[in-house]
Every structure is written in structure tokens, then in C-alpha cells.
Length: 78
Length: 322
Image 1 (tube, each protein chain N blue to C red):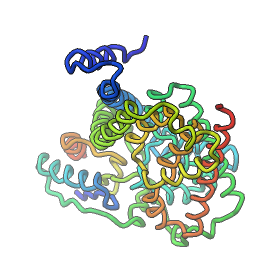
Image 2: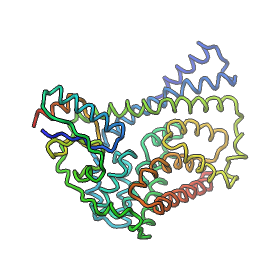
Image 3: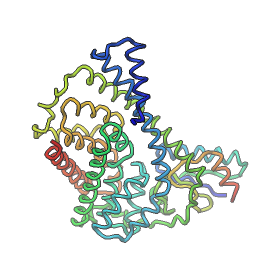
Image 4: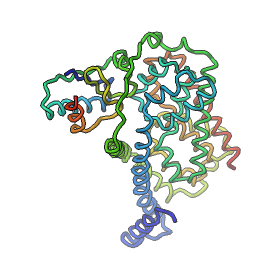
């Protein structure tokens, strides 16, 4: 599973990265969380509000930081 | 009935019975003002921000962009300014938002109407104005903000400044985010709660300091003290208020309680509105962030038109609201 956190470095982007890492651990998934900070790449996903969570190339969350439990549920639904 | 009446009783009781201060003493007036206004403003903030967050969850910027793409001048500017009020937007995502708008065919002038309206007509400012001055002044503020957003967008659109945007913006290919799942109600409530905690957590020290300063002035400075300096007859008051407002960006929560006291002491209402708009609408950090996508000339035009519009609104209301 390929998980990316998109964000240009605002406080919330770091929160989402942290929450996603915890969610991965909670759900017991074998996946790396990659941070994307380049605006051009972020725009490539069509996202306009950071932070955003991309799972296997699909934008799942944009513009907010869900709870660790919600992210874990979202990841295991895949 | 005034919903804050119980709070009034409580602050009266604390000031006059518990602390034993005289209602006519300067200290008594200051303390009562502080004890009433701090909880009132914080309660107002928490309640209204919660509902604003719920409303905003229905208007993600991705949706706004679709609505505004391929709109024209005038109609597009009006729609952009109105959507600017409800679309959630923080200055940290100004760059992706700008690129996303321009790329999907939203005209530059329409994009600017959005960028002006979004911070200027912000929920904290609206709530506090309503709590301090009543709905008439709040409505006046919203209508003036919309007017500045619409006209400055139309002017920028008419000037044809597309080549003052950094070239790379036009080369970026924006992908399709696809269908982002609509938040469930449970998620909306969780988001709104988090948003309240975030905003209130961030602004409460400014609220306390602002009201504290206001409380001291309320008790110790004679009424009409400011008439000669900031009353409607001083032509320099408006531009000066705008200049002072710029570095206070985003501290609307601390500034408005203070401003309500300035009015009590004789500051003219138009000057107050201009000051408020400068505080929330002319933000230096946002200009610095936008530098990534705009050439300095365009940033100067954007700031210049806004500042002129705000000063004009100030003079206008100083004439009308006598």
C-alpha cells in the first residue's frame, strides 16, 4: 500500500503525517508514509487544500486532519 | 431577551457583591466590563465557529473551483466573493488554491475576488462585530467587504494582468482529485469540534488582552475623549487606522473588543470599519505566501486596490453614519 501525505509544511500537515503513521501502526498495515511537499506534485493530485491524504494514488482526505481511528478505518477498508 | 443576561447578572454579582466594588467607581466599571465581556466573547466564538465549520464542510474548495471555472467578469466576481465567505481557506493553502483556480479556467479577476473576500469577511470578525455592535453594523461590514472584493476583482480582471503571474503557474498540470468521499455527519461534528478547539485555543489570549485593555479604557478614559483625534472630522484618522491595522493581521479577536471601546470614546464608525478590514484583509504573511505565484507588481496592485477600497469605505461611512 502506498500512502502519501501532501502538504507544504504547515502545522496541520505535520499533524496529519503523525496521525497517519499512528493509524498505520494501529491497523497493523505494512506501509511507508511518504511526505510530499512540492507544490507542483501536490497540484498533480488535484488537491487545493492541504493537508491531504493519498492512498494508492487516490485522494481520500483533503483540508482536514481526521482522528487516528478514522484514518485507520479508511486504510483497512481498502 | 438578551441571551447574555445571566452573564450580566453573574458579572454584576462578582464585581459588586463578591469584590465589593462600587458600580460608579472607575475600577468597578473596568472589572465589570472585563468579567462580562471575556466569557461572552469566548462563548460567542465557540458556538458560532462550530456552526460555521459545519456549513463550510458543504463547500470544499474543490467544489467552489468547479462552480467558478469558466465564469465571466461581474457574475463570476459576485459568485466568487460570496463563495469566499463560506469556503474554508487558510493562508497556508493560498498557493495550491490559487494555482487550482487559475488552472481550471477561473479568470484571474474572479480568483482575486475570492482571495479578497475570503479573509476579509471572516467568521471571527463577523461574530465579534455582531456581539459588540449589533447586526446592522455587521451587515454593513459584510456588504462593504463584498463590494471591495467584487470591485477589486473586476479592476484586476479589466487590467489584464495575466502575465504578472509567475509563468510556471500556467505550466502546472492539475490532476483530477476524483470524487473525495463526502464527510459523514459524525466526521463533520468531529471536524467542527476540532475547529472550535483550534480557533478558540489560538485566539483566547488575544481576546483576554484586548478586552483587558478595553476594560481599562472603559473605566478610566472619559467618554468622547477620542472625538477630537479619531472623530469624523479628522480626515487623517481613516488612512492612519488602516496603516495601524496592517501589522495587526489575524488578531481580529483581540482587536474588536478593544475597538468597541474606541467607539464608546468617540472614534467614528467608518474609521472603525476601515480599521477592522485592514486588520483581517490586508495580511502581510499572505502577501509573502502569494509571492510564490504572483510577481511583486501584481501583489502591489492587489494590496493597493484593497487599501484604497478600505479607506474609501471608511470615509463613506464616516459621512453616512453621522
